[in-house]
Length: 317
Image (cartoon, rainbow, N blue to C red):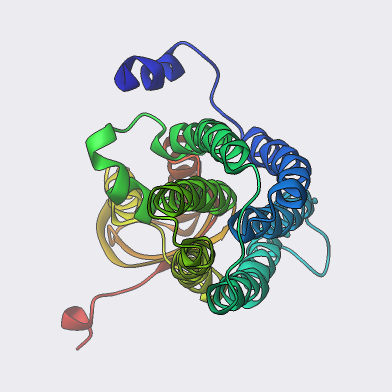
């Protein structure tokens, strides 16, 4: 069933970054309204934690969307390689909001309720709402899942996730994963509360949600940190670049290759090559143009390529 659902992507258009972010935002805004009402009616701190998380997630989605739009600004004199990395800055800010505020606030509220337990009113209403949120967040989760997976195999998702530079989708995917896990944890906590009659499980559920928020957000921030510093492209893409260059006539060897992800689907490439010795200046210039054209044609992610002619150290004597 899951495979049939995911394989529909073969028949439909690719899921865009904007769709992934806006779907997550719509789900979060809906969650905020419903959670706030239910938290007031039931008095459950688990539902209150869900409300706070929804507010933080919505703010994060908005920041990511702003970063996504800003990253697509055209190049200018001060930004010759564009604004692609601004997406990482805005996304990092979104992560800090969740990690630095939401997780701590949620854990504190849960701990306070654990020490001062109160009875939950209309607990079955909380059950219904949490079940709905598992479904809605789960739907938003599949949107990000499909975009990250692209044409890959489901069993390889974790590997694809680690290598993917769709940071905006990875962020919203993580937010929706947090939302889904939080709703599941909250539902389990309230079911145990209902079965045992122990009022402290409402607080324990909120504390567990706070810990989940902190753990998954830390994982996300670590990914963004590497992109802000200047992460290289995947080994698969680097191999494709090398193979493409070597396929061009008169190129004898690729001596060195450096890559850096500079934005959504944009890679900066610096390569040192050795060419045949009998080439004249005009031939070398045409050769370098052919290399650039072929690399950009075969590897769509390559935004800019700088080629340098070098002689191997073994021949420098």
